Image (cartoon, rainbow, N blue to C red):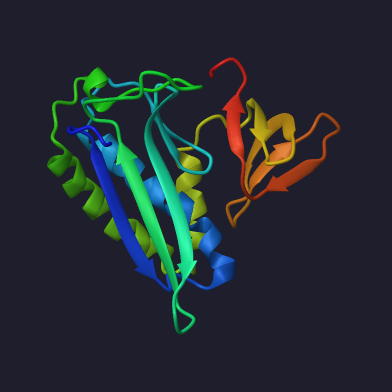
Length: 198
């Protein structure tokens, strides 16, 4: 059950983009949520960053979860549901990583107010994303708010874990992991952990 005082929002997109361009949507959504949270935090708050691909961190602690799920519809159309949960008044008591909430940073704000900022930011970013045609601009904006580029990370994949240096992202949104041998591996999906911070 969702606790009152936090923001839980979903956005339904039908035929959001051609299949080969949908991969950058999580980055676009993260930029929108980052912008909304930045708008409501008071001056002097810790850094607000995005951990690849779309976790929003305040002072390296997670404050927002984003989940995007897709399903084929009758007639061949494709539905995407973007689920967003922002910790405003409450946060998980136990988590395998640092967590925070907006209230921890003197943001006395309601879910309705946060939603108003999120609505504005999402509309602007989806216009830039332009059904995937604006992927390069989205990745450029994402890099400006990225967490940990240049740092050593571990990426947990379904079948293994990889360690190396976070070398950034490609223009289509893949994480670039530089191994100790200097090889750069593009990674489409995985859980990222920064060494010494989580």
